[in-house]
Image (cartoon, rainbow, N blue to C red; front, top):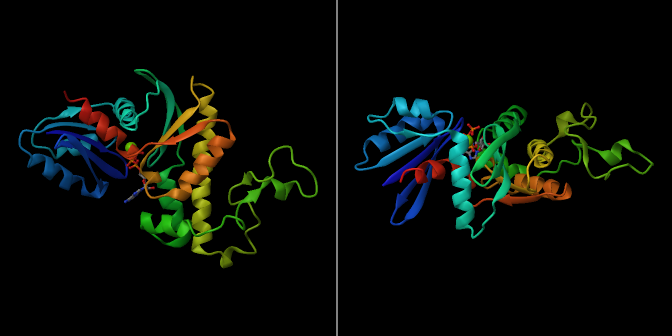
Length: 267
Ligand code: ATP
Ligand code: MG
């Protein structure tokens, strides 16, 4: 059995070979010791770990295991998952919206980190919690999908009142930029959560399309657990990426890219 583990800031992702296929599992980082116990109980397993918390995971392991640089594991995993989707792309950007967001240009076997932003899945959960008290990711995402950003985000057309704006009036001029002092007590959780997701989605797609100028491709592959069950975030990211002339792609099981890359590095 081959096992790849990507221990990130928020979630531990596991990919392992079984019955000629790949199985996936994920756990909150607080349960990292449970993952270690599972590995310690395996017989005849080859293990490779990656991610910012791989050192913590290793400290709980009984035997030594392989370790891999996160960006390299992600590149390998994305390449593998693309082939599984029947694609043969050679050059593309990868934007990993994890706890934070990291952007990479991949050309063949080369990868270069182009940048990133602290606005990511951690921001999604953190700001959502501060604004609504909610703690559960699935609930945050579900309520957000029922909300409208109309009363909270300021659009270009709101600023260019009575005259033609130089860019689309429908674009966001300022996330959370409406005059909120008069309505703050009246806003629903759904509205606040939808606007948080708008902020995260517009920020990661804006910097991704800008980074695409420095990469020989306009295909942007979005991965990371922030997209799990989160069709609103996907919609925001997809529509903004297309508007700016790039091509978005959401990878099936993309959140497991690092774990898959670590797994297939074991021959
Ligand atoms: P990083 O790569 O930045 O070290 P990570 O690898 O842990 O972090 P991901 O697992 O890709 O990051 O994504 C984490 C984000 O996914 C969270 O911040 C949250 O927005 C979202 N998420 C999805 N499902 C869950 C869940 N069950 N519990 C907590 N967060 C979740
Ligand atoms: Mg990660």
